[in-house]
Length: 440
Image 1: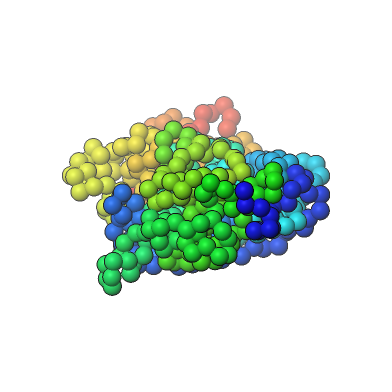
Image 2: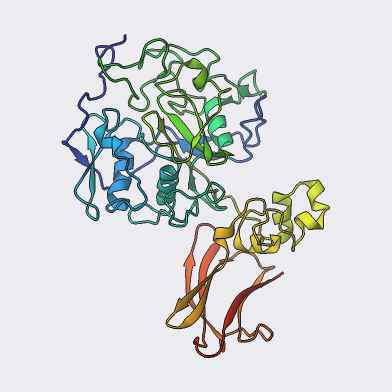
């Protein structure tokens, strides 16, 4: 077995009471993944039509603890897993009681990648980054999570205009394996491993060429009772073409891909896995709620990818040429995903017409005895007109400042606002109805 004299093993005590509480703003080191519009690998993955940035390293315990200290004082969404503190392979300890929880990184674990995080924990971390850190919201932004700890998979999709995100499978794959110089100038291709190599080196940190933290018959680090992850970037001679570290081994990493049912994609393999799990060919899937000592994540940063600002460009983005010929699929009144929202409404609300979005429909409410309607309005679509209308008989509908009042307009990610409008007639003996009319 490889021993601690090869590499200083992770701390052996299960609970470290000493540590440093982290509350300051964090910085994510990124690398740029260029060469837009590259071709797929022969397995169908890796093509990305735009340039983007991706985390140079996996998210660390220090970075995640900073997030916990401002967003999990009560821990409404179970962002902390108790195994982070109880287990030797976890790196963060929690103190205090709900409402005043604080978090500290175990000594020696500062640069280890955070583990015991679910897909939804990672998505909330991305939302927090996207919205500016600090006390920023975790429920809207790159992903609309609706205040549900574990949303259904179909809801947790990337919002148009998102900046900080979890990588899509193609974004993750390209950053790991693509090399525009492979095969000669102007050719480009994919390596079998995320180390700019078709051969995987040994798992000796700092010294191995093309190495990674995986199980090669021995663990890379072993203290007599525990193996595990190493500090990010320990394989200094094994970065990808774009400069990422540890996309081979260390921790398996979440990506956005909805695999099936409640499962999301994960790639790269971990310290626990044999070499086949580390190769480009291996696709893993875990329940989105899965939390374990060998799973973590990294984030990506996008320049704002503009939403289509005409219905025609919306159709072109979301439908094939064959579907564009079928009004029952791509027309304004069609509802191909069966969520009750016609394509025109999906466009006006900034949604994907091929993914059901029942939880994101305009929402009815009440304020001081008055009906309210909350909806999303685009700022960049001159071909759309939004009108909240009210009625007492479902026959005559009225709108405008005589009948309705706009209570609030809250900017969202990208070019959309959340708008709350109320009916000026209070509920009483007379029935009241409210609706959103969108014209194009």
